[in-house]
Length: 381
Ligand code: WQD
Image (cartoon, rainbow, N blue to C red; front, side, top):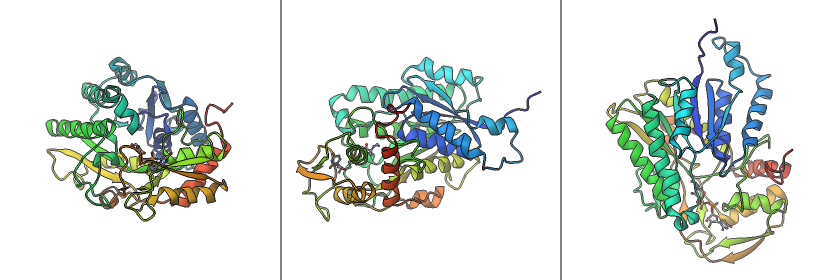
């Protein structure tokens, strides 16, 4: 008779996306989880997870199977369950839990799926409230129904709006300016209230600063659908000729050293590792981070604690790619704030989170991915 699996089953929403695929890779590499990804393909490609699974399978040859893990479980860790579906549809989410055997079979959820373009959110706010807020409520309701009460939420530094000071601690007042940012604030509050009403829940909100780069293998990375809106993928696509070579610098009259906006760019692999650390804190009874058993909920910044300006990023990418970027100075972009830099002390102290890769490695890995995949995943065979 087959022995019961020792793997913890985790659902990752948005698992095929840029952040999601790197999080799934890091979960698989712990060899402790059975990973299920649900993704509607709005800003992702199934090919990303096919590559994650293939790479993890290849790398497993040089790993040592833990003595307490069955051969079946050991191999099962590479078998990512890739589901194409929209979490705004309740039956799609219920089916995920039913397929795992119903109540109590799914150990936890990492919720990454969301629409995330600040500017776009001001044009179609209802779509953002539907996809980000309503979908999260529905997901949490379904988790309750299936007795799944461990939750890691993908939040964002945009919840801080214009911070009173940088680096920004988690205690900084929230003040999102865009509908996108407001959905992140809203969802944090929803999760906190749920954990207050139902103290058996354990949840963490991870406030991402600016993720960038790609897996060092170059097998998967950031491949936004349509025209990229974020600085690093724009610079990557310029360097392979997918975009014109002139960067529109969105304002150089900010109160910063060189007049351009400063952000806290962290390597996506460091960000993804932070999710494993967060899950680890939900495994045991961690009173160190949840001293108050009446509300097992907390927020953490995931950032480096250092900032780089737009011009510094361009220079770093110029060195990584050898590409001669042209610049034109344009007007400020609505919603941009002068500087967003994390105070990462709490995550360092309580999660053991530390960024291990620097800006040079970030730009190198981005270029390694982009140069090997000039047309992203769609260009692959
Ligand atoms: C960085 C800087 C721009 C493009 C975004 C999302 C946010 C979060 C992180 C999810 C800014 C400047 C950009 C260009 C430019 N994602 N820029 N020319 O805005 O800090 O945050 O990613 O949580 O929700 O908004 O990142 O890369 O868009 O911009 O000058 O063509 O680069 O003004 O100062 P941002 P970004």
